[in-house]
Structure formats: structure tokens, C-alpha cells
Length: 112
Length: 113
Image 1 (cartoon, rainbow over the protein chains, first blue to last red):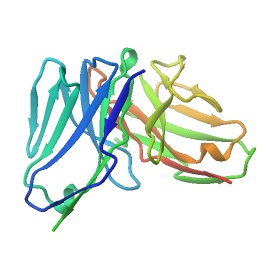
Image 2: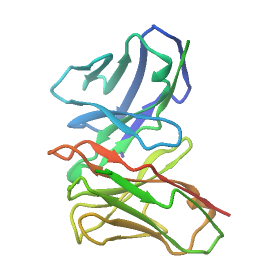
Image 3: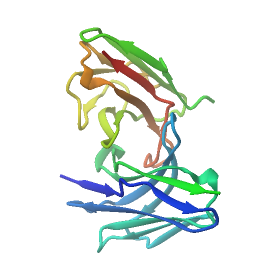
């Protein structure tokens, strides 16, 4: 079955630095991959979607890469701010009916 | 435009009690989903509904039943709650025209004693 791995350890970085989060997957070839942000006590919020034929996607300070050979996506936040502190979830398409398969998420803490 | 609403926000049940979690969306999309989120396990799909009148099992359906009452509403029922069902439950519906991205409700926190 499909397996998604995100670093379970929290990522602590200093304000202004670039945060890089990793999402690895096995036993699957997704048509697209998504990143969501989740704040404590709230539901996930969609950030970016990248398709299998795209190498990179950007949105403001966010950048996502998708390497289908390595079966890996990297999520970058440049010029990070304390307000970027949250859990970031990776999700793969689950095939028909647009189901999603989620990773466990990585907690990002940006220190002022 | 409330998006996705869920009730209740928080509930405490005793083992064996039953309850229904309600979800309503005004995104006018056909599909709706129920997930549970547990520490270290991520979001796992319980049931989904591709359209009004249809429902299908997800990854962890045991112990749950669902009803797609109409296009707006998708309810999740626990007939006999167990401590293993202590979790945070999220309802979601697609956002984009293609239905690939999902919009989540605020969640229901359920504690089963």
C-alpha cells in the first residue's frame, strides 16, 4: 500500500531563514501532491498543489518541488516568520473520487 | 458563505454510547469526506461520498456509519463508542473545479471514556 513519510521531529529555525520540509512516498506514482498547513485546534488549510509533470511551483514565499524519480517533494518557506509556525502536511492523490492520502505532518517552529 | 461547518465542537462520551457528528457544506461540491486525526497517525479517511445518495468506505471505516442526507449534509455516526475512537474528526469537501484540493471544517474533538 502507499506510504508517505514526513519528518516526525519538529523543525526549529531562526526567523529570516529558509525552512525546508521533506515528504517521501513509496509504492505509488501520484498524479499530484499537495501541501497543507494546520494550526493547533484547526482543520488543515490548502497551500499548494504540484502535478507529476511539474518540477516546481511557487506562491509568494512558498516553493514546492516534486521529484517523481526520487519519489520526494520538498516544501520551502523563504524568509520565515514566527507566524509560519504550524504543522505542515503532505498529501498525495488517492486515485478515483479525489481521495487524499496524508502524511503525519512536520511541526515547524520559527524562533524570533 | 460558511464553507464547512461541524457540530458539535467537543463531545465526551462513555463507552457504548452513540452519537452523530454533523457536517454541512455550502461549497456546492458533490464530494464530501470524513477523516479522523490521531497523534502520530496523520489524517485517515473514514468514509467518503462522491455524490448525494452514495457513500464508500475509506481506510478506517470499522465502528462508523455515514449518511449523505442531501448535497449539503454528510453525517458520521458512532453506534457504540469505544475508547479507540477518541480522536479529532474532520469533515472536508473539494474546493477547486477539478475537486483535487479539499476544504476542511473546524473539527470535532471526541473523548470516549
